[in-house]
Length: 190
Image 1 (cartoon, rainbow, N blue to C red):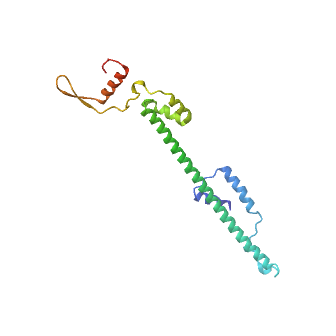
Image 2 (cartoon, rainbow, N blue to C red):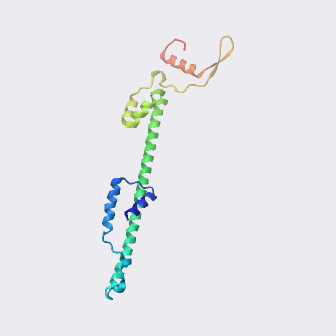
């Protein structure tokens, strides 16, 4: 019977450890007596007429019980497989949600200009290790003064006119650098 249960587990992709296999074997041995009666070998013609109906009833009950044990074993295996699949799916969903939460937190820090590209992997590791602590640490990082109240994305190129009357395009990076210089009060050219 144990081999049938083991084959059933394999059929449904249920992996069991050697330790669990031994536990199942012990439980199956309890269900299956070592001195099992093989009802097909009993010759009812040699039995007294008073015992014949009793043995037939016992034989029929035994067949029913064996079938019920098989059904229960199959049901148990199916339920266990369903629980394991459900637990695995729940764990995968939780991991995906956590990964998204970590990724969003790191991207927010980057978008808010609190970290640079090179620091993303370090902060990702920090958020994965202890999200609450990393979140508290991130809250302590100030936004650079020159960017406070400013849009952090570079503006579109603008067109200007030089004193000579020619039209020039100003790059978005130059415009951002000039905005930073204004905030810092520097007169240096960027």
